Length: 49
Image (tube, rainbow, N blue to C red):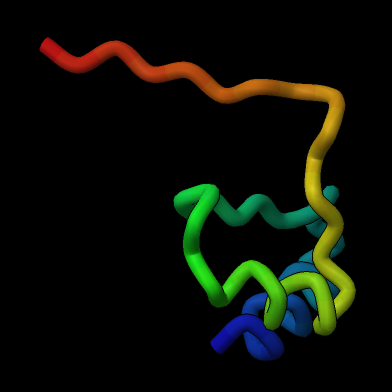
């Protein structure tokens, strides 16, 4: 699914893709092996009502 999303992004000239996951998600290693980069510059916040 990630590979198809990446191809779609390239085909449609998207600026990029974002992926959010829990800090303790073991799949993070898979994402990194696939070339996804950990964003060290930003922290993400949310506000739930």
